[in-house]
Length: 279
Image (cartoon, rainbow, N blue to C red; front, side):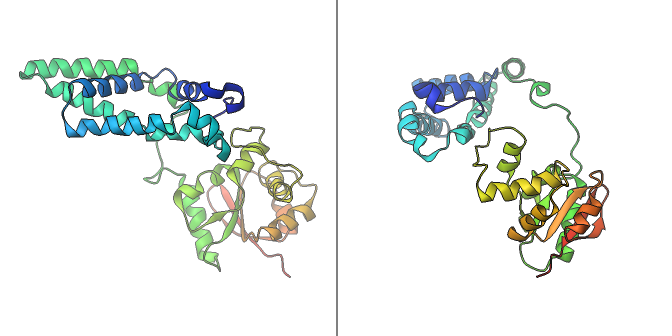
């Protein structure tokens, strides 16, 4: 989580991460109220599971002492917020909401309670426009660009091995693994983020051979720097890259051809090159 470190916050780390993660959403409070009510009055087996689950998490991954002195040793602080995904806030809130609506005996009271619960969920949650910006309807059921599907089809039609190594420009590189497990992206997503100036996904030793190779690819594919073709060619060879995918707006056709890439297809907005470096 950006800007939140164990070294600076110590035992406050878990608390600050929780506040940063949930922001203005009050659903965790509703969850805790529901768990408390279950603990005091509840006898339902379905609800009691929330108590055991929450207690286990509170003693382990949400325990400030455990996080500071044990979890910190595995260098997981930038990804720590993912532990909040396993807290069953949404399922529990939905469960307690249904229990409240079902509690009254008369239909008109159920209807009234449904209105109150709906109003509470709307007021205490996060407005959609505050979470999602530039909203656009998904192009397909896979929730990825149609052009990515076309690019993957071209690669599979021309591949020789079982897991082709492919250099994708950033807009596809960040989503291809969500769609096609039969393709191995060469550019590391975290390195791409770091190269763009962010350390959210971790830091890399810039003098390491691994980072230099990744940077040589990124400089050409995403930053359109064409001054060092030999370095780019060596990076392709060392990563055993078989295909390169660029945007049709990139304007790097001649550079890639001179670097040993052969254009084999054009989709709506991308070029697909096969790498032929020879021996």
